[in-house]
Structures are given as C-alpha cells and as structure tokens.
Length: 382
Image (cartoon, rainbow, N blue to C red; front, side):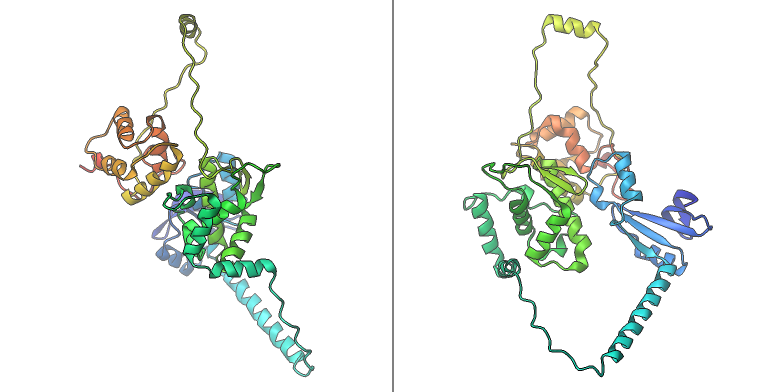
C-alpha cells in the first residue's frame, strides 16, 4: 500500500485500515479480534467493488507478543487471512472454473470410445484407519472410561480443568465432546506419568492436527477451524506449564497429569547492614506493580468464563470465580487495590496474583488493543 489510514470511513462504514495501492486502487483491511466483518459491511464492500481482506488475530488475543512477532502475523503469515471482497479474484475464479469444465468435457469425449479398463479394487484401509474407525464407533462414556484408566483417575475423581478448556472458536468442528478430544490429545502428545522419556519430546501443530483429524474424523473443509481450536488448547497448556511454545512448535516441559506448582518467590532475611546498604546505594529500586481500570469491560458472562479459566493457574487455590465476578461487576464505587486483593482472598484466590487475574479477565489496562464493545465499569454506570 502506498498509503494507509486506521479507523477510516469507507462510505457509511468505518474500516479498520483503509488506503490505496500504488495504482491508486482503494483497498480495505479488516482485523478480526472479537468478531468477523459485519455482514452489512461485507455486502457494502462487495457492492462497491472495494477489495477487502480480513486478518484473523483472534487466536492471538491471549498471547503475549512482541511488536516484531505481531508484525509477522499481520504482514507475513499466509494462513490467517481470507478475502471479504475482491471482484478481480471472482473473475479469475470464474475463468478457471470455465477452463476446468471445458477440460473435463474434452477428456470425457476422448475416452468415450475407448474400452474401459477393469476397475482396480478399492484401496484397503490401513490398520491405523481401522483402529480410528473402531474408536469413533465407541460410545463417549467408553472413551471417557478409557481416558480415566490411562490417566489413573479413580471413579468419582474430578476431571482436570485443563482438559476441558472452553476454547473460543473451532471446537464445534471436532465431532467429539471437548473433554474427550482434549484428554486424548493430552495423552497422545504430552502425558508421561513416570518420566520415562529419554529425549525431550517436541511436536508441531500440524502433527497434532493430522492425528486429531484421523482419530476423530474431522473434515478437510474445516481444517482452519480445527487448527484454531487446537492452537488455543495447546496455548492454554503452555500457560499452565506443560509446554514451551515457539510459534506453532511445542516442547514438552511437564508430562504429569496435573500442572506444575508455581515456584515460590525466595525470601531473604534483611540484616541491618543490608538495609543500610540498600538505603545508601541508589541502584536497584523495587518497582510497585499497579493497574488502571479499562474504559470498557467484557460482558459479565465473558468475564466469568475467563475467571473460571484463570483459576487453574493458581495452584492449590479454590477460587470461586462466580462470587468474584458478581461482586466486582456490582460495585458502585471504584475499589482500591487493597480492596480488590481482599476480595480475591475471600474468594479463595491468591492476593499476589490479583493483577494477573484482572488482566486475564480484561478489566485492567495493559493491552495493545482497546475494546470497542463491552460495558463500562459498574461505578461509571451509576
């Protein structure tokens, strides 16, 4: 693009990015963060013959990215974008379809008078295909019982929260209950209860997709949706400490069933001499971590889902996400930092992790993109 403008008006709509190519052709770029391009806007762009491409950044919403990494996803990655409107593309597509249909007709006429060879017998399914077919035919309860046996979970024991993660997109494309496909994926690629692996295990998102596709019979037509669901699930396991993530490549760090404990912050006794040295030497200064409330908050049901999701990260904490969100969203005056930490403690959480919890929910400021929708904090609505 020779020029570009953010939040620019195109007709009666506001485009995320609008600009012109070097030949002065007007183009639009939409960024998918919360939702895809509105149907009315897409219809207007197609009717106006304005080329528009949508870049899907939804899977990266909870990721902590550098500016360079974000730039790669926006400028270089070719798997996260799709056309919303492009008249030239539609013309080329129609021409290619016409050429293909003509080629099919020509080939059909060429072989019309030729005696057909005897059809080859159908290819026999492999043992892996047969095993996957038998697995898909099992009732879901049998699959759950098998997973519990492999994971060593006794009857009545609670199912791990990190193996029933409510991913925001793509789960409906996998024809299996979410706890079954997540549990099976965990067993296949991560689980190592006795630590018997001699070498560090590494795998890629494409390898996980191939296995899940064969195991659960996903369609190639929904490959993108399945990949998004798997990327979100594996990213969640990385945040829990099971994996180390580098783009779409993963390294297993922890093979046990439950997440690793968070390391405790080492404490050192302060002697009088140490305290004196700290006062006299103006070198390292402890920086207090604070926060600023965001102008817009996520809807309350979204906040509850995120708070429940975050509870897994606080090892040993019986965090009551429902009570916490109800009280937070019902406050009539802006609370102090101490008051919020007290609320977290009363709900069974860890006070020192309050900022991380609020950031995960999306109510404190530290984000590269502000919410356009959502609701105001409760004390600003009274």
